[in-house]
Image (cartoon, rainbow, N blue to C red; front, side, top):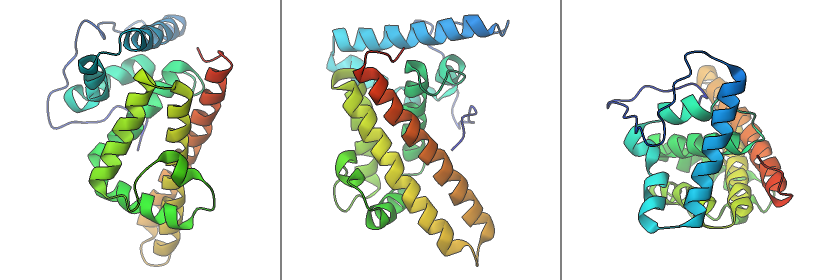
Length: 212
């Protein structure tokens, strides 16, 4: 999984009502201002009127439009900020939707290896197949918009820790026979572990009303 924009097999639509700003000037202050203001506006709009259709569109945004529009707004934001948290949640969702079978494999291996309450906190059924993992990540994202925001972030952090554990142990399995695959899994584990740390920190900031 990468923070870079990704290629898609279908055209990437750019809905003007939300994502009509271009950053040709590359002014860091302007990019930051727009990132924070759009994240706050989107969250405030969703939580003030949690209409089912609106929430459905937000949850399904990357399926319909890709990641480019969100990347343009939020990918350069600090990890421990509101736009940074939203960016990471959408990346995690995209990772699961793109390859739910690998996600399920990592999750089940991580669930069996990890010594913590993270599988319970994340809330996946046991066992969790590809469809269950897709449903889980969509439910977590939905919780950002119409539930307890900090709880949703904590669930996402727990999910990432379980996935990271699974990726680490699978990397160990492949180390002697498929070193390239082991390296890719190790990189994925490190990225997921970083996301878990950042999302947990964001949950703590939100509870202190300091996540901006």
